[in-house]
Image 1 (cartoon, rainbow, N blue to C red):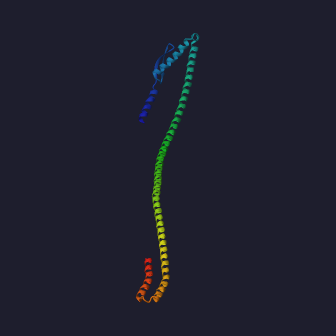
Image 2 (image 1 turned 90 degrees about the vertical axis):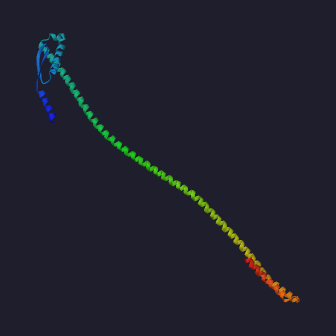
Image 3 (image 1 turned 90 degrees about the horizontal axis):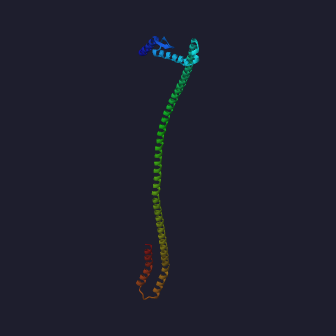
Length: 246
């Protein structure tokens, strides 16, 4: 801050100090004083001399009185001044417009930068979300494949078991059929044997009667033989029945 005050103080001293310079205008020497530099004062004098020389090249100007000449030079200098001033004002206006455009462009650039940062952040989040969804998709596909593979394996295992169960059931069915057939055959055999036994029992009294009659007719046979014959006829059916039941 002190440094800035010193610079400003130096500028005030520079502006307050007058500069004097001897210049040649229209063939005469003049002493010019001002707050500008000596070079600047010489440039002013040279500009006036250029205007005088410009008019001196005109024959009509040379015939004019000195006062008129001075007035014409002054008018041309004033014309140049206002033209330059207008150009300066136009340039100044252009500069202001450019500065305004630059200001707007800076704000637009800042806004675009903010949007770009926001878009970049959003893109990063979307990329992260995309990776997460892809990972989840991969896990789900793997789980689905495992489930389908397990189901196929289960079917493959159950089919042999089902076939084995069917074979076992058929074997059991065939075994039951065979047992039933054997039982039926055994029952028929037993029934046939029982019928034979009953038939033998029915025939036994007739045989016994004939034996007694023969005993009476044949008195020469002893009683022991008749008894043995009778015993054989009675015991034989019992022995046959016992054998058939076993």
